[in-house]
Length: 419
Image 1 (cartoon, rainbow, N blue to C red):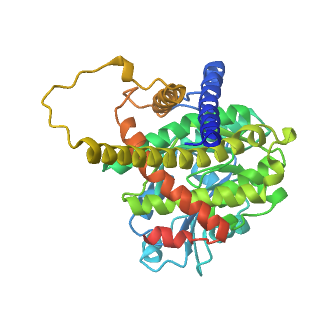
Image 2: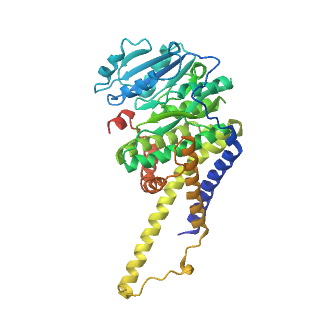
Image 3: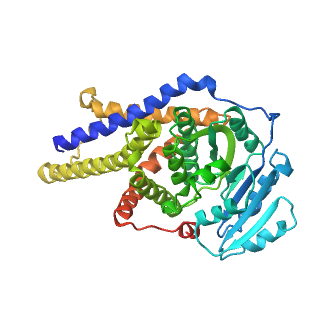
């Protein structure tokens, strides 16, 4: 492998390790500031909140989603729920009719236009002080809204609060691997919140001051990642985004490789295109951590995974080639001599130690994430599922996302939902 490639590989591995160490140092510095609310939390003031649920073919999950909202521990006269049917082709609209007479629920039916248009229906019809969105395959913890609203109450400069998203009832190895991913994201997002570097306000129950949309405008299509674009728009205008680690939202994760592939491909595609749209933020100190740390880290993550993938493929092909040459030269060794381990043959290249260190840091981040998610066990060997599965399939959705971004081939969120 060429010297230039080796140097690039070292740089990416070092940056990945550096980022993980930086997050860990932030955790140790700020861990005493991580708030864990009790179930008897009481606010000084309960502002009005509108929650909009955009729906496309959600007949299987919508009822549980709405019921979780109805069970929120929050004054009912302060809550309004908008169910926006975005041209569903299944029985979603029929399912909604059971709440027609509920005073807290309003039902809207529109032609299919994409998730951002459904959210904008909510914005156009609300008079509430706060606006929240909730995907129709997600379920909120009864205390989540109250806990998030405490952040707005404690800091008038906080303009949006993101929740902690947890995989709901994982049933197969793929979903278990995703649970590890989501647990680590809880830890990462909280550290980014401390730094002021959050770049996504996720669809499952992010809460905004309505002023954000009054000042900056409504949602845009944003390459089908409107939750990332609005966060970057807020960061550009220096609007504070925080994270509430114990505001739990449970989401139904993809249960097949193809569904996960489409979801992550859309996410990475959206990141690349939004990064291009907001390239003016990159490395500009005045935009804070999102410009100096978060977005560059995203670039390193995407390119680093692909680089590692090709390195593994190259080494595998090289190994097979050398074995074939060896067999052709001396034949298959039929010796019955037992294997004897020799420390002399252990790979001691510095890259090996860096990669081992990186995986150790991944395990640590999963442990911290599990603790923030209030898991009973602080460690689980399911992290191995994450490492193995994601290492195999993540490069494929990243490569496809880059390819689509170059050609501007954009897939609809409705296609992802149908898969």
